[in-house]
Image 1: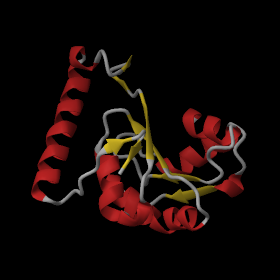
Image 2: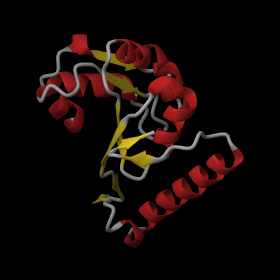
Image 3: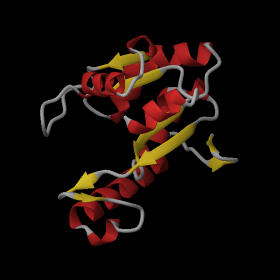
Image 4: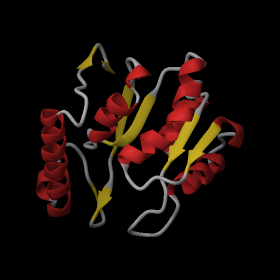
Amino acid sequence: MEIAAERYRRGLAPLIIATGGVNRHNQIIEGRVFRDLLVERGVPAGVIRVEDQSANTWENVERALPFLREALAAGLAVTAVTKWYHRRAVHVLKTVAPEIGPFHAIGWDPVYSGEVITRHNWPDVPAARRRVVREWDEVTRRVGDGSFATAERSGGVWR
């Protein structure tokens, strides 16, 4: 939420889409909690769109399509904010919303087993290593079998 709130304050995120249904680990409704955290950080509720029914990344994008289309119709650039290793978000955006065109992705460092997981320390934390390797394998497999669209980064954007 810090990334999205900061981008809003800098005038880079005039519309924010908060996604996520019930979290299977802690039972919070992610989209609603994210909205509340954004409002606490000074983002007006009127610029936040909430998708609160999804159970996975695919559904996050699929159920947020009306909001994504609203942003695109307004001529806004799209930026996905997700865990730094969560490449599936990029591929799902390209698969579910091919009209998206070039877009940005910003990663944040998650916390596993009480430790901040970065691009540098993930191999040393078993819970992180398992997640990162599983993500790499899954995305590689799904791009290979065609169930995820390919996405390449060039010129600072995903295409």
